[in-house]
Amino acid sequence: MTHVRSIGQSAYTAWCSNVLFPLHELIKRHDSTARRRALEQSQWWSPERIERHRLERLREFLSTVASTVPYYEGLFRSIAFNPAGVRTLADLTAIPFLTKAIIRSNTEALKARDATGLRRYNTGGSSGEPLIFFLDKERVSHDVAAKWRATRWWGVDIGDPEIVVWGSPIELSAQDWVRSVRDLLLRSTLLPAFEMSESNLDAFVAKIRARRPAMLFGYPSVLAHIARHAESRGQALNDAGVRVTFVTSERLYPEQRNQIMRTFGCPVANSYGGRDAGLIAHECPAGGMHMSAEDIIVEIVDGGGKSQPPGTAGEIVVTHMAGESFPFIRYRTGDVGVMDERVCECGRGLPLIKELQGRTTDFVVAQNGTVMHGLALIYVVRDLPGIAKFKIVQESIDHTKVLLVAGPDLDHDVVERIRVGMAKRLGSGVWIDVEIVDDIRSEPSGKYRYVTSEVAAK
Image (cartoon, rainbow, N blue to C red; front, top):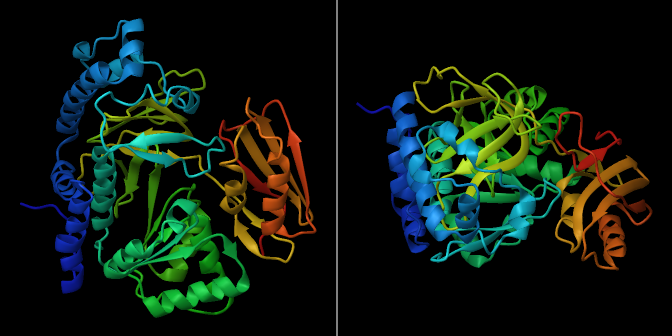
């Protein structure tokens, strides 16, 4: 008996999903296809069987890390932690948290001695603290497979036409001719999400109508903004062929979900994760936010690091058991969430996250009225040397303040580079006030907001 959601594929989509993309992954030496097939079986295991699987996998993972990764070899010795003695998932709490500061200070020691094929990555920018880390092919394969599985829950697959509305320079700058050909064959169109000018919004709407994508993928704030624009223009998009809209990288607000559903006439599937922590959870058609539990363990902790029970909000801490070459063990994400004890009515045994309270990035408005995603300003500051933390506050159309916490190697010309970069995006007449401060306080929720704007987006 199969539980896999029926997918009404075209012959071309079937070829992409079963031949072209698996070949693409094979050339990259990823085993994503085999992993996806395994995940589509394990998702139907009982919660008890999934827990037994996780415990066995955790014990093996920690044993390997203890003997191959210098940082954890020393840490485990210092706290007398024996991976072979792990009897429950709760035993994981004996290991100290991993933070961005620890990763920055111990990057080389976090690499396994026998690591091969490690690839350098950066965080996407919303954390405000630039982070460099490394992933191996096993870890990347898992994350691709987990996303692929979740995509198929919604009756769409790789090869179905899609439009990706995105703002990360990692993707936008990586569009060389090879990737362009790949995206053409896979029927994937990438649109930049930075500038929300009237002309760009009109172009986005026209592209969606002309392309007739089976799925949209992007930031909820951007897709909701496009939807509002189309609605204000009296342009219907509920007949554009969109079957599902996937949103990620920000908190999805109810009004955004409702706007997208109303305008595009399709369901909205929320996804939570990041390049560092991996694909942590994804929404199914029954509304459950399922964790990628076969390889990921999620804890909820309070401000003091104490584990919280289901139903209580706290910081999300992640252990990713794929990728032993650069392990993330009890990694503090800085995001806030709530665990759910219930079993989803879809029948999957994967545990659930009930509520995500973090991850929000505002829009900013340029002097000429152009609405931009907040990430357009984050990327001006994020990778500059010597910046420990930052916050961008658009106080008016003519005044933006940038708060910086300086690191030990702050370049003398950073302030001017920030002013020049911000002026290019916001307008030459905008006063860019850069202020060096001792610290930047978090919001009352405990979550930082790295871009805020007092200018209402019209």
